Image (tube, rainbow, N blue to C red; front, side):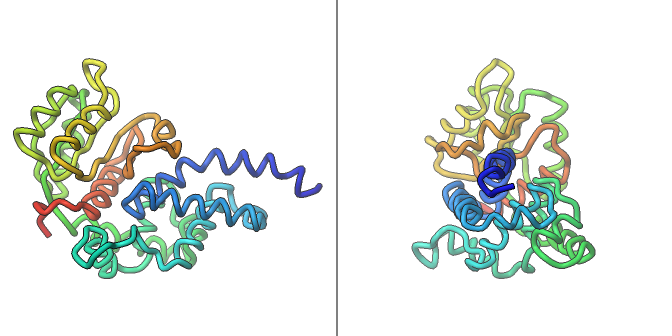
Length: 272
């Protein structure tokens, strides 16, 4: 069979998993534009060398391994830092204090659902080494930074569950809003360091609209969106979230997403 006859199948395989590669890349870099840059670089590399999909790995694992090879070859940087005091520079300094590959392992497992043996195939090493990285990551990332978090969620049980998870991490909850208008009022009353938001709210208003309004009034701050349809927010259009978890979520997914978002936060009220 010729390479040409295999191309449509390869394109289909990549397209299926590309939204989730974007999600991973954005969470890893803390930035939509930077994350998409690395995802695009991965696609360009695959166009030049398709052998990565002939390695016996599952397509998603092969795609993420190709990304990781590009990521580490570039020195695993985040967005360009304009000055030593910029948020990007501060995040870069924090990154330098972490054990190598811990964040990668944590995100691959908790957000993208890879098992230890699959993580090992993506980043190298053994399954036992990947498991060790996960243990280290949970300690390093969840204990790194604490702050004030607002929850926008219209389902009471889910809101209380998220609140318990986040408070157990050591963060302060400023309140829970069920609608766009409630969220805006709450943010004005007690400005949060970070927002955890559902997409569809009680009065059929939009969590995205609520967040956009709050950011316009209060300035930039990290957002974690929760949705049952993440692919709808991972198309490459702008603006899109850097941090996104899928319903039904797990406790570890919430912890990981919050930790990553707070890690890259630029607000000065965060407590190290």
